[in-house]
Each structure stands twice: as C-alpha cells, then as structure tokens.
Image 1 (cartoon, rainbow, N blue to C red):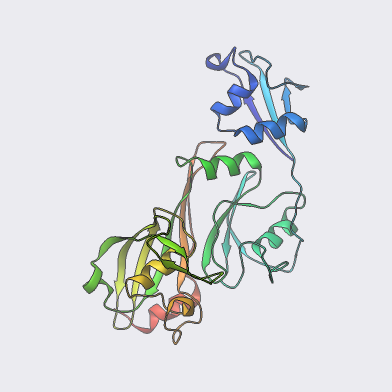
Image 2 (cartoon, rainbow, N blue to C red):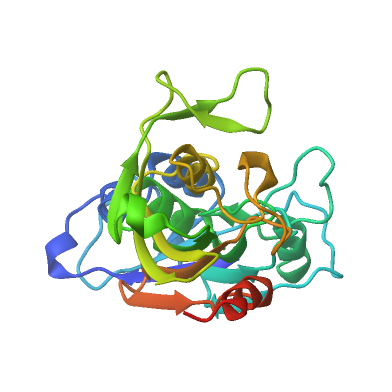
Amino acid sequence: MRKIEYTIDDEHSGARVDKFLKSNGYSRGVITELKYNDGLFLNGEKVRTVDILSSGDILTICMNDYSVAVPNPYLTAMIAYEDDDIVIFDKPHGMPSHQSIGHYSDTLANLFAARYPGVKYRSISRLDKNTSGLVTVAKNKYCASKLMSDERWRPMKRYYAITTCGFAEQNGEEGEIIAPIGREEEQNIKRAVREDGAYAQTKYKVLKSAEDFTLLEVTLVTGRTHQIRVHFSYIGFPLLGDDLYGGDRRLIKRQALHCGYIRFIHPVSGEEHEVTSPIPEDMQSVLDMFPS
C-alpha cells in the first residue's frame, strides 16, 4: 500500500477534499476508488470527499492494488531509477512489455509482479518486444493517471536508431517525418502509412554517419504503434534488423532501436529527473564495425 500525506495550507483551507485532490492531479476515477475503498483519512480519521479542509490538517491518501500478472521471478531487467511511486526498467530486447497471446509469463509485467507482490502493473510507456531500453512503470494509480493523462507531466523520451548510410544526404541532418499511420489491411501486427491513419509526427537528428550505417537520435511527438519503424521505412530507410519493415538483418537480428533517455517531473515531489541507458551491446557492435 502506498501512503501520501498532504499538509493543508492557508490557500486550500475551506476547500472540499475532492476539489483539493483534483487540484493535485487526481482523476475522477482515482478519487472514486479512494472514496469507496477507505483510502481517505483526515488527521487519522476516515473522511468523506465532501468534507471541508482546514489549514494545518493532514490529509492521507492510502492506495491499495491487486496484481493481475503471474509472477515470474526468473526474469531479469536492470532498474535505471526507482522510488516509492515509480520504477524505470532498462528492458532487454526479446522481452515483451505486456502480456499477450503467446506471452503470458515472459513479459516485463510478469517480472514486475514478482518484484512487487500485490502491486498492479501500470506501464506509462511501452516498447516493442525487440526494442530495448527504458520503460516507466507507475506503482500506484495516482502517478499513473497524472503521467499518462496530462501532457505537462508526460515523460519525454529519446530513442537511438540505426539505419543505412546516405540518410543525411537525402533527408538532412535534422528534420521530421509527418505521415498518418494505420493498421495494414488484413494484418494484426503490421502498420503502414495510410491516408486514413492517425496523425503521426517523428523528429530526428543524425548523430553519426559511416560507410554502412547512420545513427539517429529520435523523439516522438505522437505515440503510434511501431511509429519510428514505420516512418523510417516509409522514407526508404528502414531500421537495421527490422525484417517486418524491410530492414537488413546481416549486422543485427532485431530492430536497431533503443530508448536511451527519459526526462520526467515526479507527480508527488514535483522534482525533475533525467534517466539514461547506454546503447546496448548488439547495437554498439554495429557502430564499432565502421568507425567514422
């Protein structure tokens, strides 16, 4: 169970409990759950959402969770950041972020369930199975709601991707790709640029060019499924190793894509944090083959 305490100041004296919670980013759904699950206490006593706060009061929020994923203690992933509310995993490629058909016990959700018994897995960001890097998971519903629903609090991520040579000559050292993405017809997994797709915007910067590859820094303005992979394939530069979207697999056997940087404002403390992850071994070995 996670407890968060607020000391009521003069500014919020006279406010109702629910209004105070909304001003601190609690969603209506979270407030309702707290209301009906004995999650609200004022000065140590149960309190209603319509009760009035006074200066100096201590409002305590108690959040309980129930895990739904099967714990798998044999899975491993490095932890890049952790506190009482958030954990950021450095996910290896080959591990799905979420359970799905054929992946009931080998996912980051199963690892999380083993490490945090009784805590529901709330992933703020997700990575494809064969994309490596940083994945943010909230340990309670309040932090999840704030980080996911409010753009001001949404984590900012940078990806590192490797594609073929000649990228800068055709597309410039910096730029963006704006092209709508939708599900490819009669495909469950594959996406494509389609006129009837959802708006998608990807920004890029060339970090390194060599004889056989280009290393890119990529940021997402939108977050469509497979967005980076689809956009670079669409302009004729699929990621190395990405066989689903036409990438060359001779140098690496999975898409050369890694989430290596996250910046976020902590929902409880309000502090800014930056978390990094180095380019993994298989991608680095490609870069080392062709020194620029």
